[in-house]
Length: 115
Length: 111
Image (cartoon, rainbow over all chains, first blue to last red; front, side):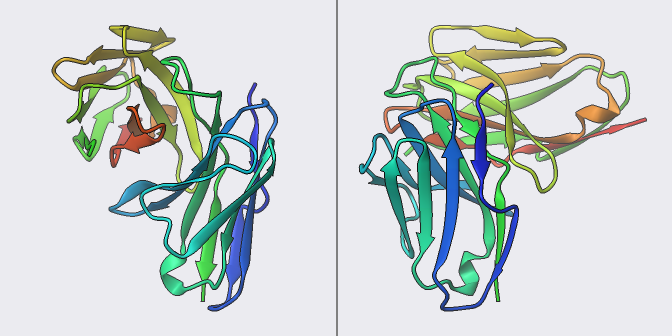
């Protein structure tokens, strides 16, 4: 079974702090994704990566950056956390390319609260 | 830009009833469609993936259909159980790699 793990289930940070959210997958997937989920807005893509050291902006990249130094690990960075970044953050991975049978697998999520 | 809509937003049914959840999308040029389940405060569990060339997929009591030309998918749940209570999300992949999600249908199955 594909396993996607996230470093924390719950995180509380202060405004202005630098925050790192870590995601690790064990299926040798090339594609990895970071989404945030908010009530009434659904899931929105922040960034994705289709290979080591490669990254692409999603729909809402402002205020975030990412790092992909190893294939299995994809980090989301909040350079200076703000209260409007309080949200549920979900990481996902999938095999490479745009094959019709490519399935995305999700981690358990990190609920981040910025005070 | 792809948009995905799920109707209804919430549904409450008695245990044992068969039910249908609906999903529609605006751009029919999709690679696949996935149905997910999400329990409160948890991540997403993939239920079914339908490739663009397929019409339906089945897993246990779940059956998902896809009509790509009309931009619609349905998730049929047979003989619903209280353990089926969750939010069900559909999402499509088009040429942009990413999944575009609907806002989900919150299902409550009453014992």
